[in-house]
Image (cartoon, rainbow over all chains, first blue to last red; front, side):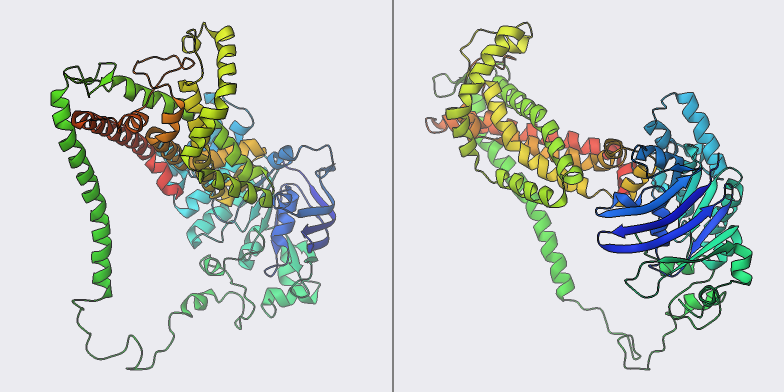
Length: 258
Length: 363
């Protein structure tokens, strides 16, 4: 249920603007990898190119190669919707479907895949909601609108929706940045449990969060505004935060450089 | 969504906030939240300065504006009540003089002595032609709107959208003349063909003559409501939050599945509103139908044979020749049209209201 993600020489553009350049990195299965770095350094762009969400924007494109377990996800013959089912994504702001109930939100992905049988959907919804630590809070009001939950609950609902289709990899783009500390803690706890089953890659602006939840950390940076983002250092989280090998990483971690 | 850090939100996560300029070491998060609050204000000379608090102003722009907006709101009620009162006052004498059953009699002879007229056939024709027009226009309009909002390249979408709006500005008499003088040819041929092969379906039965039929009238109506419905639903579809569309795409939805999962449900109240506005136009359309329908007074589901009539078209056709009772009778029919429109709008509201729990949180 978890796959290895490898990027080699990944370069991504928005039209003529080169957002990231020559990113090389391998993420091991069943680990949490944090992408950190200053604003505009391309962390989110890189994250979005892993499940081919980058190319959704007009004019955006990706070069280089990205594989999950040696399968090229940018190969001509690959079905892009299958890539996105295999590599799920949780967004910065909780985005449950506003017109759907809690239950419908969780099973939305399954329904897209043609699952119609009520018993299967019920079971999958409960399983996903339990995995997202949300079941006890919502089990009595599954028919209520998903958008009526609190921000933290909505984000866990979105995580439930993502893992309900049983992806191999889960990408999270600053999943806690819109949440309060308690909800953040709940999501971080959740990440610990989820990495038993999934490969998790998370973009975060919160370095303590990176230090708390991740096994490996990748530090991205740019020379100056307008330059493409580059991967500066990629290592075990402990090493990055205690004894980074690149000066720039150290400056960033200690707050001498933004 | 690129690199847009929500800095203020980050501050609440209990961790470090990493900014371009912070001078304190990582971990001192508490200070971040306090910083903007405690800006020192000089004593006495700021807007929120010292001294006694001024009293509430009795007359000022605030109150004047409040009064103006309330007057504008009240005006709507006054106008509606005035129209209803006018219609009722003028209609009652004619309805008293009517010697036939107003609801069921199929015919319109208010100028005779004794006057006989009935609304049944007109009301039926009004609803039938409007319903048929929507049936034809709405699917096409939604298709165009979805194409313009989600498939077409942005520039093409915008220019086509502009053209559609232009179509909405064509006066209805032009559509009516076009329907009467040109479209009638193809519609007559189509009617003959439909009758030949599908006469076993009751609505396509009968044996002519074809041409000035409900089919022609509702086709012209459909073309007339198409631009309104298209341009409103396009607006609605464009308003779908990107976050919802991306959520669907990230779950592995194809374009069409994304539209079905995120865009259409989100736009549902807007679609209903657009259809209702289209229906409003179709129900009230006068001259185009006066020019294209056959002006008969019979309740018939046959859409091919010449005939059909609507309340508004009947008013336009018969007003010039009407005497006192005749005018009263036409005004009574106007009152019925008023009521039909009201009921249609109430139903639309009810549909939107029933799902409010979901639509309100969507807003």
